[in-house]
Length: 451
Image 1: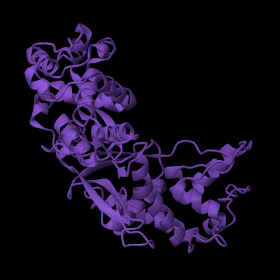
Image 2: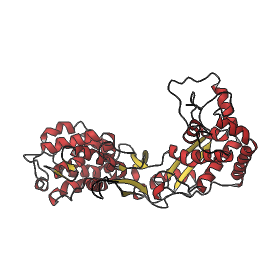
Image 3: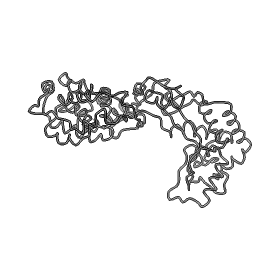
Image 4: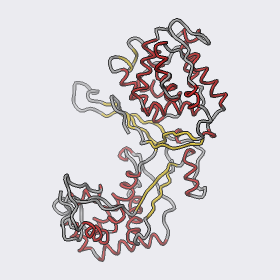
């Protein structure tokens, strides 16, 4: 996923996961003490108090956290946090930080690095220490609020920064009292309740994941399409295999604008599924109509502490981990060389992307609908074999040596026999199946892929 605005960092897709608060929680007394300590040292202008009362507990923490950037780096700003676009840059970097970090200290470090900011002076340590010392799930609540409404969070941060004329030493002096330029905000009962340990026993966090669509394409669709064409003596070529057929096999196809399904589409689909077990497995879309649901479903989980609840249940406890997903993710920065220009740096671009630690394990579940034919199961088993034989690539950046995986424990004699049966079926019906792809009818009486 990419944030909008000026940014050149590509992050893993994230999905929401519910974690038990008992694993990372604190008592109500500790929570109240942490909030009070933060609000005593993170003064706000009196003009912003009414606005702050409208926020949720998580949004309040997020606004206070984000406000430290414009408060500390005032005036002309610093690094990328300068000039007319400073808040646009801050917004995109905060979104990325909230996406890939699990704590406020790591989020601060991430934003500071991305905006090229120098370490803050000691006068700013009290509010930062109070933020960094919040119980972990309160920090997660602030990051989650940032993801939900980043523009509003940054706007609130500006309200605070623009209304404060104080310098950093005021923070160290202002414990337990207001100043002429700032007041101690008192969180509302509702905000405290929302942040309390007893307000629900689960915490929603965003953790990295490889999408099901990526797995279906890399693990099943691409190797399955290649195997089908190879066994039929075909290669992707517009003069032999129409581009629309190639697009359907490798990408699932598309319906044309204003398409109307023919009256015989159910019959056509039945014929196609019977003729081509690979299509029966994964489905797709012809020019005029969509196929009904595929017979194969995929799901995946990174083996990490946050996913133990599902990986343990799926494997009878065989696959679990004591390592957090956030300890498995790192960032790679590269420079794309430019061509031409007046000097060697002309046209260069620095870009970053996230990677997972080497030897990170994934649990991938491939399941079939009831009454799926043996040939369809065999087509899927053969696709998995071919995927592994071609390097086992999932995800992106394989050209730079990333995304290679080794599969284990999916083979057995029955599945291998089904894969062999599928290859025999293709060999025995080679001419008929080959012609169905060349003329784009797939064995029906109509051209199904002509767009």
